[in-house]
Structure formats: C-alpha cells, structure tokens
Length: 243
Image 1 (spheres, helix red, strand yellow):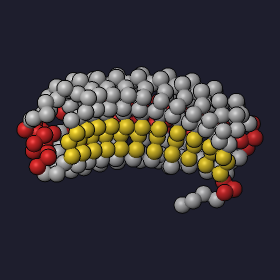
Image 2 (cartoon, helix red, strand yellow):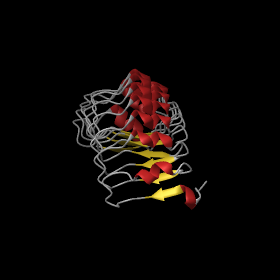
Image 3 (cartoon, one colour):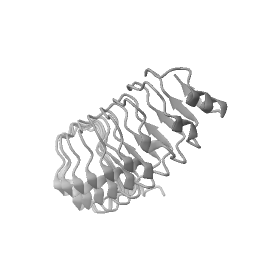
Image 4 (spheres, helix red, strand yellow):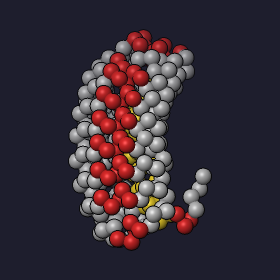
C-alpha cells in the first residue's frame, strides 16, 4: 500500500548536517528519507517515530546507530543504513521483527549482531563491502530470507546454521576469502543463483551438482578446474556455470 503523501517526509540531499528538531514532532510519519545529508550522528529521538514503516539513512557519515532504533517496531518495509561509517550495529536492531529489507552495506562492520536472528520477517539482507570475517550463528533463524548479499568482505566460511535458510534464492559471496564452498549450502532447496567470484576456491564438492534449483553458478576468478564432474553435471541439466 502506498503511504499517504502527508505521512512521507523526503529530505534527500538537503545538506542538512543534522536532523531538524521538527522531524521528531511528526508522530504520524510512515516514510522518512534522510539520505545524503552529511549526517554524522542520529539522536535517540528517532525512537519517538513509532509509526515509521520505511527509514532511509543511506549515504551519510554516521559512525553509530542509537539503540532506540529498536523501538521502531512498526518498520515493515525498508531500513537503509548503507554507505556510512558504521563500525557496529546495535543488538536492538533485532527488535525490528517486521522489517523485510535491511541494507547495511558499504560500512566498516567487522561483525553483525546476534540479535539479527530475531528479525523474523527479513526477506533481503545486504551487508556487502564491509569487514566481516564471520556471520553470527543466529543468521540461520532468518527462515524467510530469500536474498543474502555478502560480497566484498573477508569471510572464510559460513556457520552451519545457514543450512536452515530453506527459502534462500540468491547468495552473493563474491570477493571473500573462501577456500572451499561452505557445506552449509548443500541441499538448500530453492537456491537459484550462487556467486562466488574472486575467492580462493580450487575444487568443487560433488554436492554442488545436487542443488535442485540452481540456475547459475559464477566461479570466475578462482582456481577451480574447468573440467570437473560437478560442472559437467550442472551444465547437462541446464545450469549456467561461469568459470
């Protein structure tokens, strides 16, 4: 449903530097866009906007997000935090149990909070181009997740709990530090696209050919052999394999 224009406040690229105090008085706001304003801080007053359904804080210079972000229990659309200078995300983000889309890409994150597993409604999670070396075990609790974007990190593997992501369709692991394909992916019934370009792969496990829905496997810029039985098996059934 499209929000009533009276409930939308678009302050995109206004060069504000800080959020105007008048914003916190807009109790009926459903959509707040504060992208590209040079913001360096977000006050705890954000928690007062209990009616928000979408919040865009992308393309700023935020170094932190206040724990009051978790008080926005009505957020059921999108939360954009990408392209900031965030070193961490508060555990309270897990209280956004209705949120469907979260983008924390292009930051300085070395970890995602365990609380992220409580975001039961997430369909798409983007955490690309950070400094992640691992994912929390709670990632497997996101049972409705369909897209997971993790390119440009330093991941050496994935937790075993990823095997529970039975709705996952798209997984982007490009530009990480994987020496082998994580076995947690074996048997994901709906996985269609798997991008593992620019990792450290030297072989393919046999189980990759048994992923029932795989349509595209991108292996470019690894050291995987071009001639292998898993590749042949995938191509015979119509899966596009890029080497």
